Length: 122
Image (cartoon, rainbow, N blue to C red; front, side):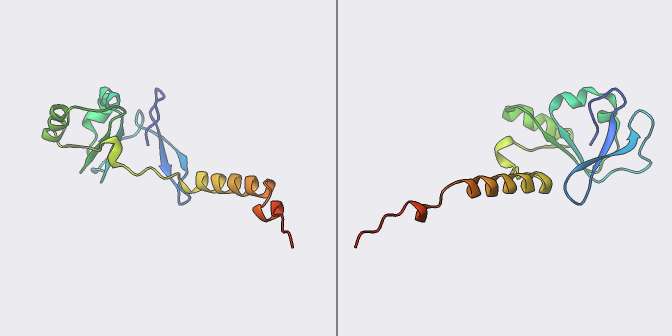
C-alpha cells in the first residue's frame, strides 16, 4: 500500500491483516521486477506518475464512485480491471474483527438475559 504522503510511504499487510510501515517509499525505491498485483483505491491515484509506470502483471481499480459502462470499458481496454463497489465483499480485517467481537461480548455481558425477566406463575 502506498500512502498519500509526498514520499509515497509503502505499507505491507502482516499476518494479522494490519498494515505495517516497511520503511521504504516509492520516492526513493523502485521495483526491479513486475509486481503480481497492483490494487488502485480510487481513480485519482492514477494522477500520480508512479501509478502509471509501475510494472505490474495485473492492475485492479476500486473506484470510490460509480463508473459508466463506457468508462469501465475504457479502463479494461487499457488493461485495468474495474471492481464495482457492489461486487466486493468487505469484511473487517482480523484485528478490527477482534475489536468488534469484544465490543459485542461486553455489550451482551451488560444486558439482562431474557430469562432474568421471566415471570412464572404456578
